[in-house]
Structure formats: C-alpha cells, structure tokens
Amino acid sequence: MRTVKKWEPLGEIDALRTQVDRMFDQLFGRFGRTWPTFGLKGLFLPPTEVYETETDVVVKVELPGLDPKDVTVEISEDCVQISGEQKLSKDIQEDSYFQSERHYGTFERQIPLPNLIKDQEAKATFKHGMLTIQAPLAQVVRKPKVHKVSILTE
Image 1 (cartoon, rainbow, N blue to C red):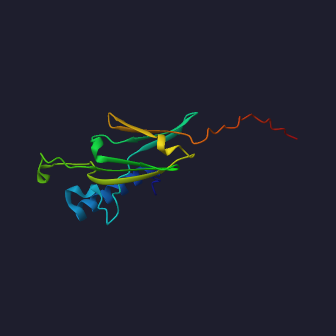
Image 2: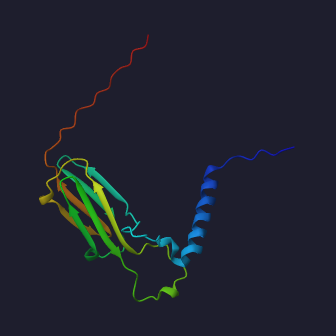
Image 3: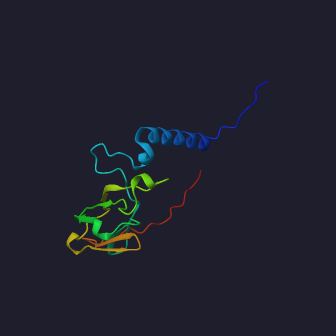
C-alpha cells in the first residue's frame, strides 16, 4: 500500500535554495554569496520605493551601513540612477570571518520614474541608512476621479 505524501512547494523551494547556496560556497569559497559580477556593475540591488504626492515624485532607497560619500545620485527628467560601494572593513582580516551574508563591492540601480520631473530641482537626503530623493513633477498630473459602475444582470 502506498502512502500519499502532501506536496509542500515551499519546502521544495527551500531545499533548492540550500542546494544553490552549497554550490556557490563550493565554487567561490566562504564569500560566495557576495555573487561574482562577471564584468557587470554589481548584482546587489538595494530595495526601493517610488511614489507620488500631489506635487512630487519620491524615491526611497535602503542603504544601511553605507557612508553617503560612497553613494552617487544622477537624475534626469524620467529616471534616477544610484550607484555606490559597500566597503569591507579594513579593521578585520578576510580570513577572520566565520560568516558573512552582507554584500560588499559596487552596485548600480536605475529607477524609471512614473512621470516627468523637474530634475534641476531634485533634492536628496541621507538619514539612518535611507536615501530619499524628492523631485517636483514637471507638470502636475490631475488623476481622474474613479466612480463605481453598477453591474446589471439579466
């Protein structure tokens, strides 16, 4: 008699992740999860939020532990480009680490904006590891009012 085993897709995904982690550890050593760039400008993509207020477009980027001097922001009327570098501490020798899950090296992130902005009036602030870029909309976009439509049945 066969036993029916319940399929657990999350368990299978976790097992696959573990196998991939093990493969990278074997290929690239202890620091394998810093992901080699293979000529690309870093594979680390800091998490972002982009939203609009009535007058501005706001972009927030999480950059914990980075020095603002190591971050560059370039902006055009329809896009923000953020690049920087997370540096390995010079106080600790690489072979002293037992575990490291942080990304070190360069990164670059290009973020398209939902509407055109006045790029010359953009402002950027960096506080508690959060980069906030705020730029006024080039033209205030009036969003159409939404109304509910009743559905008739036959």
